[in-house]
Amino acid sequence: MATEHSRECDDLLLQNTFTGRRDPFRQRHGDGVRLFTCGPSVYNRPHIGNYRTYLYQDVLQRYLEYRGHHVLRVLNFTDVEDKAVDEAKRRGLALADLTRDNEAVFLREAQRLGIRLPGIIPRSSTSVDQAVELIRILLNKGHAYRYRGSVFFDPLTFPDFGKLFGLDLSQWPQKRIRFWRDTYPGKRWNLGDFILWHAAKRGEPDAFVWDTALGRGRPAWNIQDPAMISQHLGCELDICCGGVDNLYRHHDYNIAVMEAVSGKELAPYWLHGEHLLVRGAKMSKSKGNIIYPEDMFRDGISPQELRFYLLSMHYRRTMSLTDRRLARARERWASLQNAIRSLQDRAGDAAADADAESTRRLEEMRLSVERHLNDDLDVPGAVEGLERDLGKLSRDCQSGRLSQGACAMALRELERMDGMFGILGLAE
Image (tube, rainbow, N blue to C red; front, top):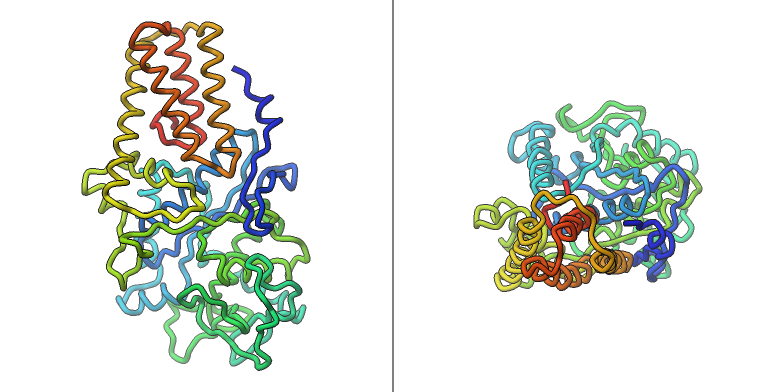
């Protein structure tokens, strides 16, 4: 069944945080879509809210590839930051010993959830030289300065600072203020200079610092992503993705650093996924409501069911984890599996093509899925339509109204469609 015509004529619309619109996606350069997706901070294990973000990023890559794009993607491990250093010191561990265990958990759980990962996942700790080089350029251009051995970025040297968030620079304080920590809690803006390089403290163990041209120290969080991006993808991306928390400070810091270095736009498309709430609140240690995938697996929820559930709400809508909604998602997933088994039972080993009417129905089903995914990756809408269409196909197969060849073709089409979002358990 031909699909190229529909892919060429129908735009993929992405809700672009930068413009506030649903913009048609246009690839920037001919060698592929350059995609940066914020990966985990591996001072701790990722929880299911984090995996909700990684899942929408996974669907984005899958659908871009389905539409014929070659995707050049970087997902990173943040393994050098204040939280990681503090946790390693508290537990008496080397930084690598703390973070490698959490990286292994992420890789294992991502595989179980069907999340496709890039072949190379850079770490902050393997990009220190690149971070130092970027800081050197920023110092030479006057965007950064040294203070007590550390290095800070002055946002007022960068035109349109805060343009992604829409920051009102008229509120900027007259007095210079420096923010020394990598991250700060809450949805607020630090109106002042942000840190790029942490100078080593007196007596600080070698395990937490590097000897570089900037002196002994470590790169701050907000230079780490630019270092990994520029090292592996260059300075001009197509799409940057992350959670909505990154919209406060972090992504605008990345824009300021990268564009101050290169003089080029970092990315024309920015996507941000909303939170997963538990008992009405964002997951946090202080609230005691953090849930990890292994907690759900232990309760009998399969990785396929968890993937289905986390994709059952649009990624830009806040989602609440409740027993009722989880139970309903599991029922829907089971119903889809029953319908697929009906097709498999009827198809047998048949390899014949379907008749013209069955072919038309399958094409309409596929076009419905594509229309929803073209609408800012509307997986919930695509699945709702698929449930209706697949239910009808299953009943017609059971009744004999569809031939074995039609049922076999339906299975082949479903497997190909499942490559777009991976919720049927048919795609590899």
